[in-house]
Image 1 (tube, rainbow, N blue to C red):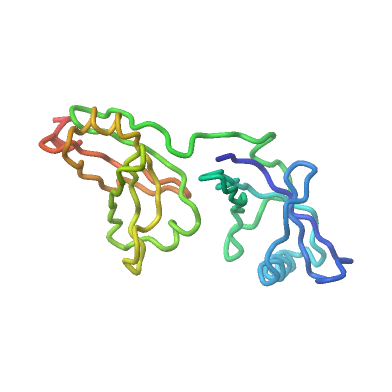
Image 2: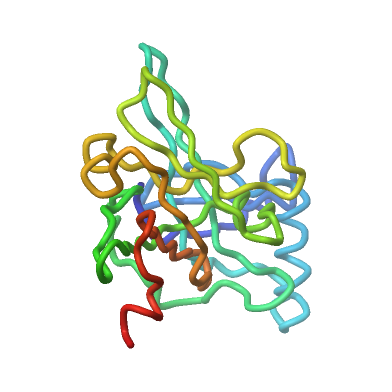
Length: 208
């Protein structure tokens, strides 16, 4: 996973769509906004007195792109643009270069039998999360991790994977019993999960 700044560049002379908006990372054009999103962006900027779209920037995340079982999967790029509220900045991007991060950071101890982890949420997980914010684990004998998923609103399938804990680490921390996992906080695109080993005191109890 990598975070960076994306540039949104108008292509008024695009032969396929006069409202086209190209997405650049560095000097490389990596794609275009969807047609309806390009129109929405232009309309939103026009409301702010920008009748013609200037080149602007927004935060972006580069995800996926893995190779598994000899098959290569395409990269995906998620742009943080809130067209109903705050528009992308017109200058001063947050990232001066591509910043790579572990998509599944290690659990951090927060008291006896308590562990926390904060991970970035993809758009689908953020906007299709079960209202009770339930977390489900799943693994198989062929996997080397125990994966944790945020349930989706429809309760279909496993949901959205947010954490993968290596099986050896999982066994060391929790033994052969599944921990209780709850959502502590969601801030922007980040979710913090609390893992509680079976029989451990709550985080509140550990501070008394």
